Image 1 (cartoon, rainbow, N blue to C red):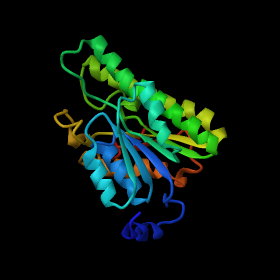
Image 2: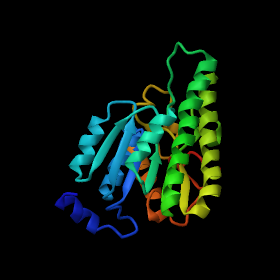
Image 3: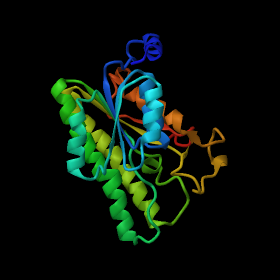
Length: 255
């Protein structure tokens, strides 16, 4: 860690200081994942970041903050890739941001469903399970899984698309996985929680029909707001929190 970065982390409350701890952030090439990596870096954590896309920009941004970073490109629906990824551990925290809400137009409804379940649910199960097993051996760890307001409310965009129905179902499954893993991991010292974003201004949501007038704040969320919410759940700040879904959606969902 650089001297400038060290001076920043020395000013942090000890409960938030992640110096000397290693964090895995998935989906880190852009949007919420990239901002999550930057937030953890500002807390002093060393990072392993992964994505299917080119991840160099996030590597450069995190390195400039003075922490160590390892970049791994790979498909998290492949169990062999996940196994290899965890060879870079042990990890103190996992922020599993990777997921998708888009699909090639040529896919049939069945193919869209399979894609969304594979990326949003299967990969989540593989990565979360691997993290919990590794963290439980140490006796402490923090896992944050990213769901969606859609998984609570039945969807954030008015549409009859079966693809969007599959997305909503996949994120509801992520919320269920948060609770299932929390029930089983908490006695082993691992806290598992989730974050449910509403509409967030990222490359993935560009062109989607979000009505900003429907947001009590009058705007969509920002990726950095989500990144910090995720990061804080990945620190000992969340030491007494397990199985929670944190709503970060500007007040859209209050139910």
